[in-house]
Every structure is written in structure tokens, then in C-alpha cells.
Amino acid sequence: MSDVILVIGDKNISSWSMRPWLALRHAGIPFQEVSVKLRQEEKTRAAILPHSPSGLVPVVKVGGVTINESLGICEWAAERAPHAGLWPDDWRARAMARSAATEMHNGFPAVRRELSMDILGRHPGVERSPECEANIARILEVWTAARAAFGQDGPFLFGRWSVADAMYAPVVTRFITYDVPLPAVATAYVEAMLADPHLQEWIAGARAEVAGA
Ligand SMILES: N[C@@H](CCC(=O)N[C@@H](CS)C(=O)NCC(=O)O)C(=O)O
Image (cartoon, rainbow, N blue to C red; front, side):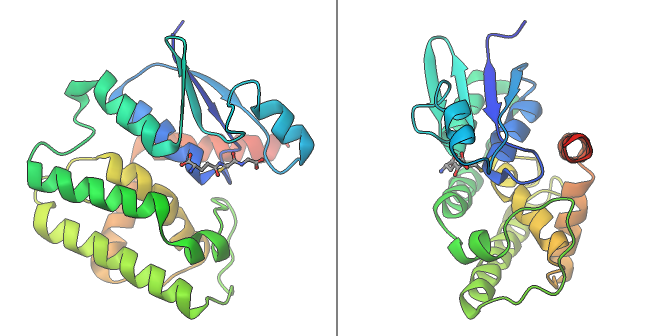
């Protein structure tokens, strides 16, 4: 049994959980998965707190420590599996990938608020505020710049799959859920992400959880 425990929320809606889960899968790090049902008010908090003093998921428990924050977990995964290449090799690409990942981690509040993750849902008619449109435009700018500068070696933002892709995976599913019109470069990226077997496994897990709810 693995010494790594990853505590996550519901796969259909927990965008923050999806990111490190994908990173651990891509890194080939075995882990025990513990799932907490979100949006149950005090019950959710009571279920999370024994695992995570921050009261939030995702969290990794390993070696007697607790690692919270999705990006912090991805960084730990990159260190734990250095040969998995969770960050690009080239320092320029790596710097840009870190910048893209952190911009996602603390940015795009209108996208997060107005287009909340609902992988299996389809809500094409949802109105978007100007702030949300501006967030979307900036995301597309980040994707386009990454693909143009470093996309030669593969279909992901920096060619090979990286933590930057983990951070934007929930945006990919949101663009589908809310039927956001995309330029060709973004459509190709979305298709590549959806073809990723690990993302497919996560989506299948979401389907199973929703069916069993
Ligand atoms: N900045 C945190 C955000 C984590 C977060 O907001 N998690 C949500 C679920 S996606 C949560 O735990 N909510 C607790 C609740 O719903 O009670 C991260 O990057 O991990």
C-alpha cells in the first residue's frame, strides 16, 4: 500500500482536487485516495478537518507531514518523481510554465465564480460578465503564447504534459461545460487534454460518483 494519501473532493466539481490528482497520476506516484463530499455545510467541514487543518481539499499526507494547496502538492510531486518531468526541462519554458501555473492558482476569479466546474453539466446559455470575458481572453493569451514558444514537442501547453496543464485542466472542462467559443489553437489544446487517459479516468470517476449519489 502506498505511503501517500491524497484527500480530494467530488470529482465533478472539485477543480482544485483535480489538479494534483492529475499531477500524481502523470508522475506515476501511487496513492491512496480519500474522497470527501463537498457542499454539505458542517458535514463537509467535519469530514475535511481530520485530514486538513486548513479546512480545504486537496491535501496530501505523507511522511508525517500534511501538504495542502494544489500547487504546493504539484511541487512536492515534481520533487518526489524527478524523472517524470512534471516541469519542462528548458529553464525558459519552466519559468513560463511556473508563471502560467501561479497565474491560474491565484487569478481568474470571475471564471472561477461564474463558470464553476461542473464537468458533466452542459450550461451553454450562462451570461458572462465583462470581467469574466477579460479572464477568458487572458487565459487564451497564456495558452497561445505557451504553445507558440514551447509547444513543438507535444500537444500540451509546453509540449510535454506539465504542472501548467494540471492547473488549466479544470478550465478546459469549463470551456466545454459553458460552450465558450475558442480559437483554433485553444480548440486543439482542449482536444489534446480531453484525450489524456488520466483526465479521462478522472471524468469517468466523476460520472461514477454522480451516478451513485
Ligand atoms: N487554494 C486552495 C483552494 C482549495 C479549495 O478551495 N478547495 C475547496 C474544494 S475545490 C474546499 O476544500 N472547500 C471546502 C468546502 O467546500 O467546505 C488550493 O489550491 O488547493
